[in-house]
Amino acid sequence: MTALSALSYADVGFAYPAGEPVLAGVDLDVPAGDLLLVVGRSGSGKSTLLRCANGLVPHASGGRFRGEVTAFGRSVRLHRPRDLADVVGFVHQDPEAQFVVDRVEHDIAFALENLGLPEREMRRRVEEALDALGIAHLRHRSPATLSGGERQRGAIAGAIAAGPAALVLDEPTSQLDPQGAEDVLAAVARLNADLGTTVLIAEHRLERVASMAHHAVLVDGGVVGLPGDPATVIADYPGAPPVTRLARLLGLTPLPLTVRDARRLIASAGSSIPLLAPGLVAGATNPGARTQGEVLVRAEGLSAAYGPTRVLHKVDVTLAEGEVVVLLGRNGSGKTTLLRILAGLLEPAAGTVDRRGRVAYVPQDPNSLLFSPTVRREVAETLRLLGRRNDGAVDEWLGRLGLGGLAGRHPRSLSAGERQRVAIAAVAVGGAEVLLLDEPTRGMDAGSRLALERAVTDHAAGGGAVILATHDIELAARCATTAIVLGDGDVVAEGPARQVLSESLFAPQVLRALPPFLTVEEVAAFLSARSTVSTQDPS
Image: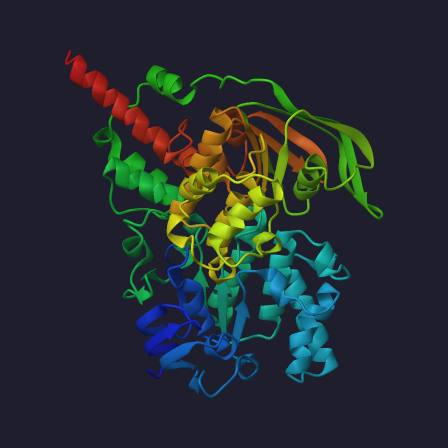
């Protein structure tokens, strides 16, 4: 390790018990004060790389470990995670795994008590962590009553309260609404810039974090590439930010990481970009309403509360064949509660639900559904419980969600994104006409999200319907027909997805850089169509 390195990996290899190697000969130095972005598909080894930084690998995982990892001069072979807690703060991919006591502020204080800090110092640090993450109003709540995004912010608050010299974050914004993600990342950026905290962060939604990173590395099959400029490292990566992929499509350089830089690049390019005739663009980006069939679910006047807290207030939802509805709103706005009522898992305090088709629900946490020893058996178990056997349906859903190569693996050995896809397949294989998916892209890489999008649109096109509760605006732009926005339990916006998304402050990146297009795919289709027209009519 060099004198200025915070974290150092030297010829690190690792395999989980009875598993294939996950890391292979990793050599990596993270300079003190650096913000390093770790990029890679689900299952590539990103989480394992991060878990080495504080000794969770190998001390909490077992397995075969070789090489050396040092954190501020301390060997993770010789120091367990508790011995490194004062220098390395770690936030798990699954925030549910990080809470140990029954109140948010007590959980944040728990690590400080283990470090032996005096009570006055602990109180100050807890207050600062609550304020930094904007969750002071949750201090007396039980983690079990929080939304997924609220738990994620609580877990990050617990990590930064100890004031570690390095902060390791595994998918820290995967369950956060856009504003919550901005707040969390702004707090991380302040720690990095003002306190010199070293940050190692793995993230799939690169549009949120790429611009704040000093360097990035690509992990592929357990091999970690050389650190480099983020725009260079992710230039050809499928999960690059939409504006980066847009510039690549248009042949513009240097590739931007932000909407601001993309706008400047497009403006400076001028006539080098193919002319976008307003009439043609309007036709290409307003394709007309998708044909809808019979109503499958009709909910009227739904209200719900947890104790004195109102969660839903007189919400109406109609879902018809062929529809893909995105349910948007900040963490805690009532999205999960609405899905659970529509699925029949919760009784509303008021209102009615008329279900004219079978309804299946996939919760935020896939672990609550996964109990079988292999992926294939997990998916087949649904059909067994329904009294049916259909190997063809099992194969179909494994194929739709790109799980064929994982069929023999234990579900619990998979990455978060892979487990999410298994849970969706295990529910959808039952043949329900209506699928209710709660944060389905959590932990998913670009390829997995594309497989999910195709599965969702195919299901709707085949006469089914889907509701997605999500914070992924880009996903909504690509596959939704209708958008519903909740705010404190009320419907604050509802209508065609294009209209609702276009009017939002958190509109898709491409719309903000090159209106009226919503997605890179729309731009590509438009340019392809124009090229075809030009070829057929040279005049």
